[in-house]
Image 1: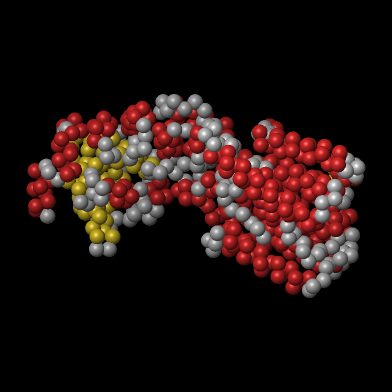
Image 2 (image 1 turned 30 degrees about the vertical axis):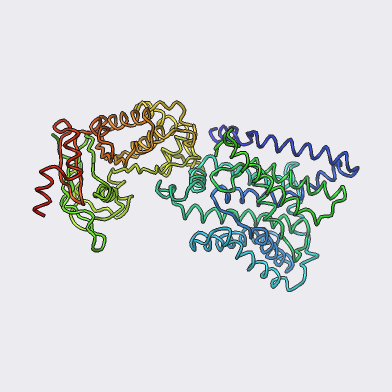
Length: 328
Length: 256
């Protein structure tokens, strides 16, 4: 089968950057295991993986956005709004299947809003989504009416906490999302067009690429992935708090950049994003266990972003040539 | 001589009160390299932009193989078989050679409604084109960002050929190239004509033009002031045509 052969070729292939991320994850695990007796337990490993679910899904979308030369700093609050929609459906005693539709649907709608502002309205993505972040944050407060949604029925949890053939549903969802995004990026014209746009929108247009359509679509895809992430969030925590998703955009951008995707667009790594998410969550969890207050987590994330980009900038200036080859 | 691929009749272009181009009559033939020469502001660029569909002419008509055409966008020109290779090549440095050649017109097969790239076929086709052009590029999978200026020109030419272009317009293709690279691109230009393409070449380098062009057209102050077969003129004459020192040009400019 052609598809199977195509799948086998490069889905998880890794370059130097990705191997060093894997090594960094392992080193962090070893250090934390030595530093804390509570670290190296199967329960804690499950916690880290559990905490990575939403960020993995959102990170895949963010990888596409950055590869295209875009960004979405409102993505965490988009997940919050999707979570509220799901919570309302569940709270009203709605069918959990309806809640399953509500997440991706709200995500897609908000993706359309973002795309309208950024792609149709031509507002630079960083500014446009920053504006939307302000609007959405207030929307979360208004919709929640100053109160957490809590004690939600467990009906969604029962759907999403199950296993299919021994594989937990979240792991299954992430695998499917990863393969779908990978195929779209590496095996369809869409991926080429996305990377060409990330390299230069003007050149892409001259090459006859439907730039507006591709950019619009990508914001919607990112929204849908975020809506799916919201489902898993609500299923796990069964509440929606005021500050939901407030550090998610920062985390997602950090993980994607750590993974080797260019902040300037045109180059990306999906496996790098996965490893970037894992490293980030391992660090956050480990630091917590050795007694660093969670207040410090965004500091770690921020320093990582600045460190990686600073390191790349310095390496690019060295006469040795580019730190990362321009392999898209 | 066969019928020309494209005939431009009485082409004029005005930008407000400024006349950039007036009364240009020109024939472009398949299998021939036609060089456009002229000082800055002579109207060469305006003329090729009209051919490329980037500007509509204010007056006159374009006829392709006997049929009048009107271009409203570069896409229209491309549909008529005209490909323009601009100085700043519209290539994506982060994509491979094969991907660039097919960008926007990928070969694909549909599986469950999803359009999958036919990567092997595209690679083979590009491999063939590169060999045919004798471009000395061995790996169509290499990123364009790793190529030299001349090799990038070769990729842009491949792209034009792959779009079945029958008229290729090259805007100063050697302007930024080293000597050896320039030689290669000039050879590519000849091969393009040998393949049956019509080639329009804009250049400032007169000796280069003599090396590849069959015909030379000189623009001056928005007019076509001379047309010569390359074999029947020489370097000094062309220079005097460009600067306006030539008696023919003087006579022409006196009557206007």
